Length: 427
Image (cartoon, rainbow, N blue to C red; front, side, top):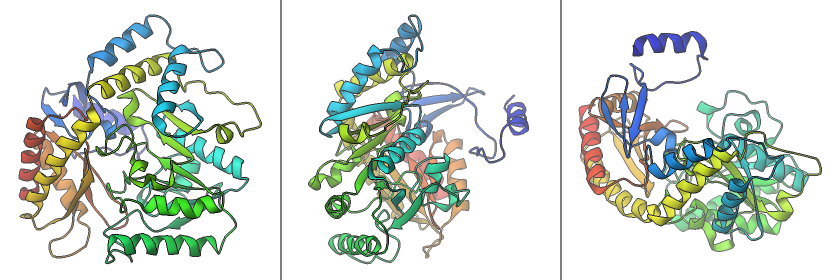
């Protein structure tokens, strides 16, 4: 049955729509931190639909909220007052840390970043954007244009002029040999030099932890130092929190808070985990920025009653059960467990991450050369052992991406680490 579905998939969907595994997987249902495939095999899910199933599969509170809302009304568009949308916007604005915040809901992280770019360029009257090397911001025309990851950038055409700065990758590149303070200073000097060669940009967009790029991050405080330089020149700071938001990094509710010395970002984008699988994205910005557009705009599907009901129930569950604290505690144990394994496996270059956002970088033993074939082999071996993980990486890197739901238990973390250890040793 799965082979037939795969053949049908290939016949009607694009060739570039990637599938994991040599024998692609059809997931039919899930519960908690586990999912099942069409053959009835059970897996511990350490990827959550690309960091999207944030709390748990089939979370009763979300399921109940969606069913009840669907029985009333599913959709009306933003042309009408929408109580669930207003209620979720109020919660998000309060949690954002941005003064006088306004919230606009979209259907995805890509669309959220598109909107942030529209706001920044309109507000600043500039189409120049600063972005980070190794970054990923979505698959639309404008977001591809600012993505600094060749593997996810199919065209160089763009409505924007994009300039890339150093800093998103700590352990590779020309500044990798420096200590943290020297690293930050060198990146700031690079930014200052770049700004001396161009017209004033609209904004810098940055992921506090680069997701698709392999869960890489700079030393704490880098973006605070950048913010000081940007603020002096009126340049906006956009924090892309599509993967890092809602407490996934454990130590902070938002990834930008590790760089908060100079204040919050001007704009924050979010998506993925807030909907726990429902299509919710959005933008948070100061009122003067959000309100700068001088023409009409609506969203047909952004902020529908159904998705907003799910988002409210999911956010309430997250906060009431302190899943950020759980990500910090269980994620810390999982990182240390994987680092102990890595010390004995020659093709693991580094285990890095924060909370339940962990990257395991693989290289050819004794070198810094990427080992994509090893990453694929470990992915397959982990699946055979009953564990689903992701993979990624940027320029010349290959990384396993570990990002379970934030409700992961200690026992499940130990189980998953043991499966991943066997998979790593099998290569």
